[in-house]
Amino acid sequence: MSDLVSPKEPDTLATALAELTASHPPGSRLHTLGIDLQRSHSRNLDRRAAVLKHPDLAKRLADELDYANPRQWNGYIPPSTVNPGDPGGMCCAAVIDPYGGLRFIYNQLGRRAIGEQPNNSPQRKILAEISTEAWRREHPETREGTND
Image (tube, rainbow, N blue to C red; front, side, top):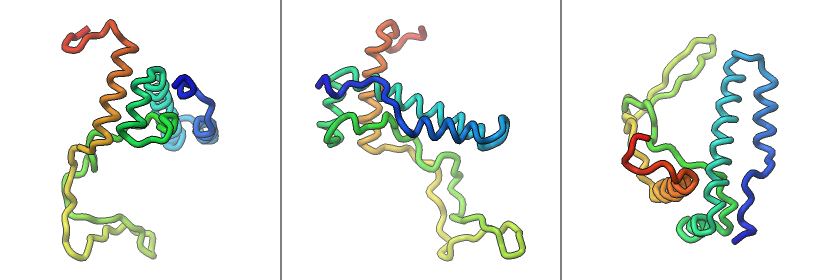
């Protein structure tokens, strides 16, 4: 499994995000978004590298999540909730009308959104377990149940 371990690999997404961020003035929404995306991508790469350092954890990616090669995983773990911030209101979309005004169009059946829900997918659970174990191994001084 040693061929699976490659801590930080150069990637085009990091380059694209850096270019996006640099192409907008500091303080602009797109510059701030670019910085946030770079941070998220960096966290994913760090998480991925931590997992791939441990052959048994990398093997779990292949065995339990059907990756042909554990290096295919980009380090992303889906969020713990689905539809975050959704109060469960009427399903609608905001559109600009032909005159430049903002209108909300509600679905024709009057259905309501389900609101914020826990993400209880089995894949997310496995990714979180594998990642947590990699973190514990990287930080042996931190023990579960303590406030250190």
